[in-house]
Amino acid sequence: MMDRRGQGALFDATGFLVIMLVASSSLYAYSGMLARETRTSNTADEIAYARTMLSALLRTTVMDASYTIGGETVHVSDTSAGTLLAEELAVIMAGAGVDFEGCNAEIAEIAEALADGREWALECSYGNVTLGGASFSIGAEPGAQRISASAEPQMAGEYAGRARITLHIWRP
Image 1: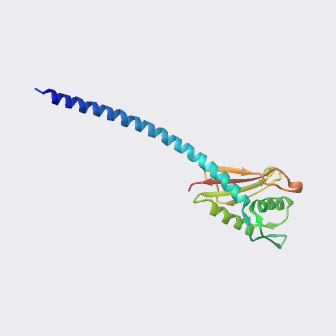
Image 2: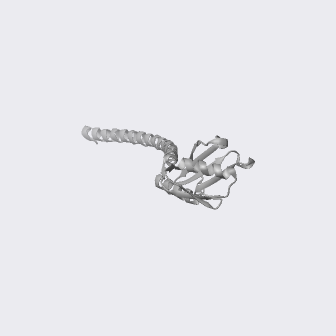
Image 3: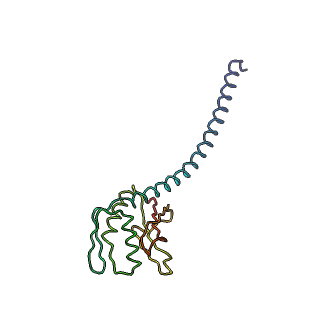
């Protein structure tokens, strides 16, 4: 027959086991809630990063680039990337034969530096493309799980308004 001390020790061990099971179940349930919050906050962080990256990209100064319009090379320096993209849209809308490869390569280099390991694509459009607008893209084909940020650049003259520059980012 068990003595009282042995029975008390057995009761204490059983009580300790029950308390530990309840505590570990509570921690497990709480950690599941934290994981959901982390996924949501990661999406919010990516949206904020896309907005910041687009803003930084459009304000970055392109030191030296060139483009060809009507067979003539135009050199640009100390111009913001946003201004160059708006100018490219305006020239395309004017219907001139244009090659902005040099400028787009400079802008792609800046975007690559800002992307911090993410894949990216930049889409620029003016008006409704199917109704006589214009558009072009720089970078990779946007991924399915992309986050996007848009801006409307200032364009002068008859092309003021209706232009949109959209940056897409995603993890590889």
